[in-house]
Image 1 (cartoon, one colour):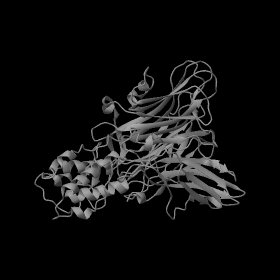
Image 2: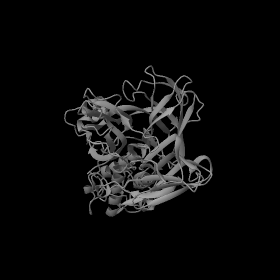
Image 3: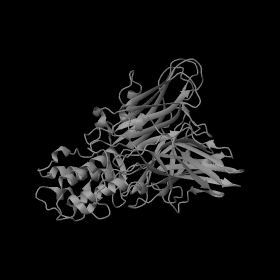
Image 4: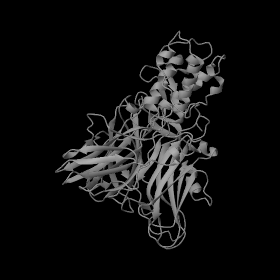
Length: 212
Length: 349
C-alpha cells in the first residue's frame, strides 16, 4: 500500500521553511506526504535480462529432467531489500519469458522464488507454491517465447531470517558492515514427463514495488 | 554528529496533521527518519544481467556500464557469477574496475569456480570498489575477466549495488537531518541539518538524487551484435521497464540511455522505442564508444511511470515494453556492445 496521501511528490521551495516563518497545516502535510512518498517509490530493479537475438541466450536445466525433480537453473543475489513503513518487505513484480525446448508432449513448470537464502530452496519446491514463489506453466515451444508476470510477497515471518551483514563503506569511504535485510532470487524448473521437454528461461525481470 | 540509518522508513501518522492542532514532535521526527532512510539506503546500480559470455583461454573480456549513482554513494559492490567448463574449476582473474591495478580486495582477485555440471551458478564472488565521492554524476562502471591460458571461463551474470550508508553527515553536502533537533521544546531554526528546513532540503535531495531507480536495464556483450542495413531487433522479447512515479498526475516520464557501439564504412543507427515513443541515436564510424557521446547528455525516452492504484503498479495493468533495434546506413556493419538504461536526476527536478 502507498503510505502517502497524494501518492506523489509535491515540489516545495525550501525557503518556505526558513526560520521565523510560520508553517501552515497544508505545508506541513505536503512535507510529510513527500517523505512518505519518496520512501514508497525507492524500490529498485533487482534482475532484468532478456534473450539476446544474436547470442540465443537461454537457461535450462543441465541434462534432461527425467527424474522429475525440481532443479535450480538460476540464482541471483544477494540484493539489499527495500522495506515499507509498516515493517513488511516491498512486493516483487516478476516477469519472465519461457517456453519448452521442443514441442514434444508434456508440461513444463518454472518457479521464480524471492526470499531469504535459508528458506528459498524449500519454498521453491513446495507442493503448493507459497506467496513468495511465482509459477509459470508451459506446454508448447513458441517463437518468440511466452511472457508471463506475477506478484510475489515474502511472508512477514521470514523477515528476521533476511537480516544479514553487508560489507559497505561509511561516509569517509572506509569499509564497514551494516546489518540489513537481503533477498535472493532463484529459478527452478521441472517437467511432467521423462521426454526431452525441458522448460527454458529466456528472460527475467524482478522489481520491487510497495504494492497496494 | 551524524544521522543513523535504519533499515526501514518510519510509519508516519499523517492523520495527526489537522487544522487547529499543532504538528507533534513525533510526526516531524518520523518524516526526518524516513528521509534519512531513503537517502542513505543506496540503490541497485546494475540490475542482475544474465550473459553466459565465454571468455576464451588466455584472453580478457571487459564489461562496461553507464550509471548515475545516488548523491551519497561511496562504494559499488559487484556480484559476479562465473562458471567453469571443467568439473575441476578454474582460476580466473577479475578486475574491478576493468583497469584496476591495485591489490585485493579492490583490484585483481583470483576466483575459484564450481562446475556447471553440478549445479548452476554457485561460483559468485563479491568485489567492492570506491566510486565517485558524493556525486550523482553519470559515470562508467566496468569489470574485466581474464581467463587463464589453460581454460576458458564463462561469465554467467553480474550485478552491482550501491553500498548502503550506515550514517549520513549533518552538513550542507549530505543533508542528514538531526532528529534530536525535532524533539519537544527545541527551537524552530533554519540551520543546516536542523528543524523543518532540513526536512525540506532532505526531501528535495531525495526526490532528485537518492530515491531514483538507478538501473532499469543494463546489458553488455564484449563480442557485440553486428547489424547490417536490415533493422535488427537486438533483444527479444522486448524489455520490461517502469519508471518510479514522482509527480502528481504523472503517468509517464523520461529515462536516459547510452549505447556502446561502433560503425564501419557508414554511420549506424541505434533505436530505442516503445509503442508510442521513438528515440534514434547515430553511431559514428570509428572505434567503439558510448553514444551519445559522454561529453553531452544521454539520450532520453519517455516510458510509463508506476501507477500506485494498481496491484501490479503497471499503467492499465500492462507493461509498455522497450524495443532496442539497430542497423547500418546503406552498407557496412554497426555493432552494438552494450545498452545502459537508467533514471537520471535531470528528469526528476
